[in-house]
Image 1 (cartoon, one colour):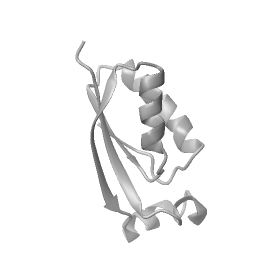
Image 2 (tube, one colour; image 1 turned 90 degrees about the vertical axis):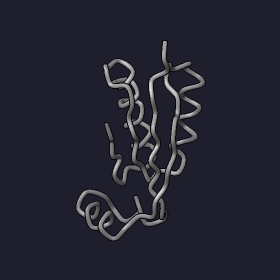
Image 3 (cartoon, helix red, strand yellow; image 1 turned 180 degrees about the horizontal axis):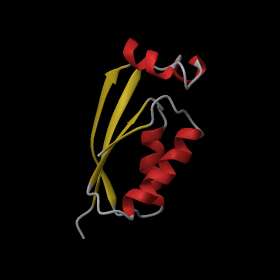
Image 4 (cartoon, one colour; image 1 turned 135 degrees about the horizontal axis):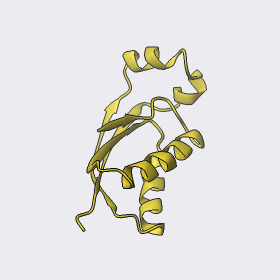
Length: 99
């Protein structure tokens, strides 16, 4: 499953992450890929997993450059201030730990 944060930035990205993690942990889904432009989200995710001893792990991280197609898709729903100062999209794969 993939969940695209689109052009959400903090604090909205963090709120969205909290909702996603709670739903993911309580679901039957084994893995999720988070797609985000928020540079601090990976750090926040690592801290949250450790602090709350969540039964999940980060398995893979990839990045790509934000394309013109992304920008065009976001322009109606987000201000350029949300995505104008970043140039990377991160793909963060999280999986439930085997218990």
